Each structure stands twice: as C-alpha cells, then as structure tokens.
Amino acid sequence: MPNLILYHGKLHTQDADYPDATAIALRDGRILAVGRDSEIRALAKTDTEEIDLEGRRVLPGLTDSHIHFYDWSLFLERIQLDDVASLAEVQELVHKTAKMTGPGEWVIGQGWNEESWDPPKMPTRSDLDAVAPDHPVIIWRKDLHLASVNSLALKLANISGATPDPDMGVIERDEFGNPNGILKELAINLVRDIMPQPSEMLIDNAMKNAMMKIHQLGITGVHDMRIMGGEDGPPALRAWQRLRDADEVRLRALVMLPGELLDQAVSLGLQSGLGDEFLRIGGIKLFSDGATGARTSWMLEPFADGGSGMPLTPMNVIAEKVAKADKAGITATIHSIGDRANRELLDVFSEVIGKNENQTSLHGRHRIEHVQHSHPDDLGRLGPLDLVASVQPLHLVEDISMVDKAIGDRGQWTYAFRDLLDAGTILAFGSDCPVSSPNPFLGIQAAVTRQRADGTPAGGWYPSQCLTVEEAVHGYTMGAAIAAGVENDQGSLTPGKLADLIVLDQDIFSIPPLEIAKTQVDKTVFNGDVVFDRLS
Figure 1 (tube, rainbow, N blue to C red):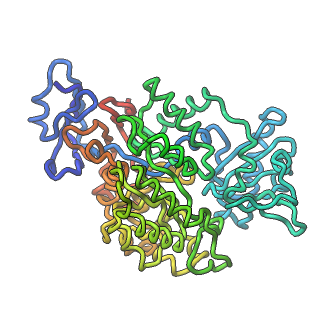
Figure 2 (figure 1 turned 60 degrees about the horizontal axis):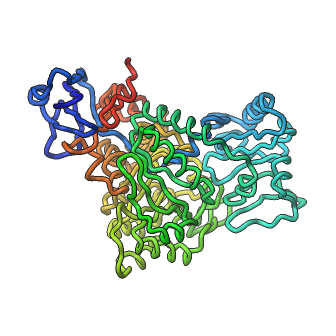
Figure 3 (figure 1 turned 45 degrees about the vertical axis):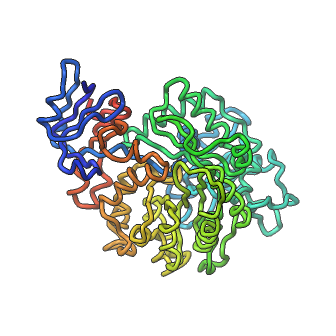
C-alpha cells in the first residue's frame, strides 16, 4: 500500500505514458503509481496519508547540475557580498566583521562583482588594510577565479615582490612590482594553503543547514563540483560520507573528484557511479581555462580591452587525462569558458572518444561545464560526441553587460542554448552557486526570456537562443539525470523511480515568463518524505 498519496494536482511527469496525471502514490521511497485521482486514491489504505494539492503544479525534484555545495555551505557562514553595490559597502562589511572577530583570526567573504559598481574598481590590499589591518582578509570575487587579500594575508602566505607567479595563476602587482592584493586563478591557493581548516563539526553542520535551505528551492539533487586546485576534494568527500553514514544526506548527491587525483582513482579501481541512491562518485573535474570577468577565459580573438585569456591546463595534459579516465570508466567534467578553450576541448574529445581499446563502460557522460563562449562552427559538435553541456542559465543575464563590453557582437554565440539543443546536445542545468543564486526558478526564467528581472533588454538578449519552459525544466530534471547516468531512477514522475517531487505555488507553464522567478515551492518531497512545507 502507498505511504503517501498526493492528488488533485497538475503533474508535469515528463513521461509520455502519463500526460494528464493528477495524482501520484509513493511507497518506501519510490513512486508506486501515477494517474487520475480516482484510480490513485483507490490505492489508499487506513495508514495512507493523503494530501490535496488543490490544483497546484507538480514537477519532478530538481537537480542543480553544477554547484559548489561543500564550498557554498561554508560560505553561508561567512560574509555575503553578492548584493553589495560599491567598494565602500564591501569595506563596511569587512570592517564590521573584523570588529566582531578575534585577534588574528581570518575574515572571509565571497560574492563581490565590481562590474556592477560605479566606478568598477576591484578591491586591493590597501582598500582592505584601511578597514581590517589586524586580521588576515580574503574575499573572493563572485566567479571564484579571483580573490582580493590584505597585506597581513600576503605576509602570512609569504607573497612578496620576489614571489613568481605560480603555474596557472597570476599575482597582480603595482607600478613598483609589489603585490597589490589581487590574485587570479591558482595564485589564490598560495593564500588558501595557509588558512586554518574548518572542523568536521562545523563542516557537517554547515552542510546540513545548506540542505535545508536548498529544499526550500525545490532542489532534491546536486552535482557537487570541485574548485580549482583540488584542495577541497578530500574534505568534501569525507564530509559527504560522514553524513551518509549518519543517514543525514537529504539529497541525491553526485560528488566530483579533483582531476589532480585521477591516477590515484584509477589505481584504486574507482569508477563513476560508485555509491547508492543518496551519494555517488561522479567524474574528475578539470579546468581548461579561467573566467571572462577575470579576463582569463581562453579566446580565439582578443577581448575588446586587450588580451586573449589563458589556458589553465595544457591541452595535451587534458587529452591524456580524458583518455585515461575514459578507459577506466571515469567521466570527465571539464570547465571551459572561452571559445578557443571549447574548440580545443572538442578536438580532444573527438580524438579520444571511441578510440580507447578495452574501454570500461561509463556510468554517466563526459561533460563540458559552462560552454560560455563558442564559435558558431563548434556548436553542433557536442551532440554527435554524446557530450553533455552543463550550463548555468542565470549566468547569461548576470553577464550581459560584461560580455557586451568584453567581446561585443561575438556575444550572439554566448550561452547559445538553442543552438546546442537543436544540434542534439543534452543540456544539464545548474547554478554554479555560490557564483550565482541556487534558485532554479531564476535560472528557468533566464533561459526562457534571456532578460534581466526588469525586462531588459526588450525582447531578450539574442532571443533566438531562448528555450521553452518545458525545455528549461528538462535541463533541471532529465538532463541532469542523464548527465549523472541515473535516468532510470530520476528525472521524471514514473512508477518505479525515486520519490522526489515538488509542489509549486503557481503554474510556471501558464504564467507570464517574467513572473517565473517569483515562484515559490510549497512542498518538497524527497525519498517519499515531505522535507519542506512552506505552508505548515
């Protein structure tokens, strides 16, 4: 008998066999049956809980296919700089936090974006010294590819005018050759490496808190990404395992491995998909280039303000790793922003895919993360290679001004979701949180309208790339499931699949598209249990 029945709803099942379903029955963490109210309610027994949905829209549980969940959990405990409007506001928050922080302890923040300030000035060490001279300070830019630190942090990390740029990193300097406090890419790790590590108790509590927050957004699954350098890999995986052992993982978590540890993973015989319905090993995370905001994305033509970005990992090294991972049954998950980085990466996959002898079958698919800038000749290449484009719709509206400034009308092939989809590419949608908000309804609205919340630009930014609401929802559900190799268990409201679903306060398929972002989740059901109820 079912444990729970939800009826009198409008189910977007994404299963052609159940196009007009209004009710769903759940039992022991699985979907027992889907259909009309009368047939599903007839399954109820004495102990079955029944919930009247009062005509509300129901979707499969949503998955964020690109989130730095471990890092976001910890950042929630630190200074939030996402909405600051000026350098002065950053300084005010850093000063306020320093006053409440013990002597010599770190002041840490994340989320600032100078592109939205007037004037758009990046914080330097002198800006931070002025408000927190006695505490080491590090504040990450929103893209996590650049950070600003103060003089004490530089001193503790032994970064001076004589310190050379590390591989795949840049220490910005003033006119005298001294570090100005701005660190790009792997130069950030010179500071990260000397920062105290959070305790296991703090990490576990932060992740449990983050799970509750993300349930409120209708998210029941995450693909947890590693950031550059891989130092977060082992502590993140240990934390996920501690929580799984304690039966406290309330998400379908796919956890990526640092690309630096591929050899160890292969030698141990690890493969993508290892785990259970709550926690699985994903693929290796590699970085082909940087980010447009930091002008470190690798471009075919120079930026309007100079430079063509930079590769972060040599393509011959990526090719070796992809071939080794592919043969061992480990998927490759590769960050790629610039159009040259994407082209070179597609050349690598074209050379490697299908040419491995004695290849172990993959659980999940190789994927390119972001696919931000593309040359039009390359947009049709992902589909035939069976590659997933793991993309973040909210980035496109947040980056409109930056992209227009950086590359001009070449932006018509930036976040080219329609061209990718029409060429047969599987799209998996995510947020890149904490770079952007994890709210998937902001992402759906962005993909559908290609407009900011205020409706600009009129008609959408390169509107030929707009998606339908159905296509955007697919990116957060079946697209994500296919990317992870769990499409037989997740992604649609189909009998036998896992019992993850959400109930919305409005029907996103019938309201004006610019109203989608206002959608709230009334209920989130995970593994057959109501884990969030906004109205209770």
